[in-house]
Image 1 (cartoon, helix red, strand yellow):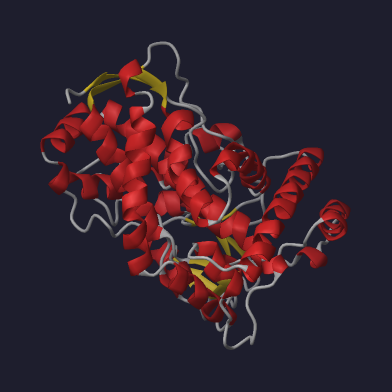
Image 2 (cartoon, rainbow, N blue to C red; image 1 turned 180 degrees about the horizontal axis):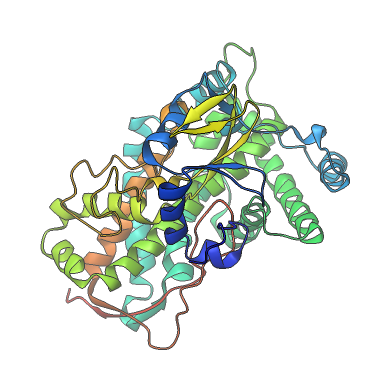
Amino acid sequence: MSDAPPNFLDPKVQESPYEHYRWLRDEAPVYHDPYTNMVHVSRYEDVRRVLTDNESFCAYAPLPDDAPTEHQRRIYHLFKQNGWVPALTLIARDDPNHRQMRAIFNEAFRPSRIRAMDAFVQETAYRLLDAFVADGRCEWVRQFALPMPLTIIVQQMGADLEDMWKIKRWTDAFFHRIGMMLSEEEEIETVEREIEAQHYFQRIFERLRLEPDDSLLSELVNREIPEWGRPLNDNELHAEMMADTFVGGSETTTNALSAGVKLLVENPSVWERLRDDPETNLRPFIEEVLRLESPVQCLTRRAAKDVELSGGKIAKGSVIAVRYGAANRDEREFPNPDDLDLDRKRPGSHLAFGSGAHHCLGAPLARRELWWGFRALLDRVESLAFAPGKNDFAHHPHFLLRALKELHIEFAPAAR
């Protein structure tokens, strides 16, 4: 690491952020970033406080029609003229509005529904793996980590599985747009693709209003929010489809499945322990993957008043970059934080799914997808290795998320 403070808009910093996170935690736990004009918070206890202290910290989400620049106004009018202006998502709302809206998601993701989905999640994992396991090699991201959770959420959103890769193109547009790494013209192109998705899903909304079914989306379309006296409107539904269902419900699981296999190849003793006793070791492994690689590296909040954290002052109104990826490797909370440790005490104490009122509502489903994804691999594969000469282990440039572009592996299929 150079002597200059880190610029988290630099793809090189994003590619290998952990030494920069250590600098933040040790030297500037409350770091006023000149590149983004945000305040980075990086220590575990500070991040947890920002996520749970709703009097001192609130949602950060400027409405599209409050757009201060000509470029942002252009995006707003593009949505308005050709599609639906996305409303605030769950993470961008404060209580009581957040609590009222989240209640319908809590009902849609209730434990009984997750249990009812488990057989389909299991079947999907084994079907995808069995399609290529005899080849002895694959590009893991494209052939498994992407379609595994995407298949689940496409089915639950009432879309046609034959349209999965078309939907992936649309969700990629949203993924890259929120990453803060595009040119203005590239961002306009992503908005145009998002509007294509809106028109596709609008037909599904209208069908489900006339003919409700047992899908998760049908509940979101039709269930009334008592305090509002109505269900979600089209603008709210379109916002949730991209942010909290497709990207939130598939992209992060994809990234954990990808990172997890990379860690398994790099830690053969862990692979052996998992193969020997998956029932004991797979759950702590999943939690370590989530902690070490934090598929969501950063989200934003705003200071609701003047606040002091770790001796640093944050002025009211400041936008805060909440660094999950840094907090989850904080040695003040996790001994030997860079190690993959299956025997770590309190393995689920990481902040990969957030904390407090905005804790990820899809976390139980994500954990089941990770369980069956890795379990299928353990059952079908004897040994793992990186494909020689094919990997650069590059991640997509992104300010918020951490996503491997591709992962080429070779393996010996297990005897069946």
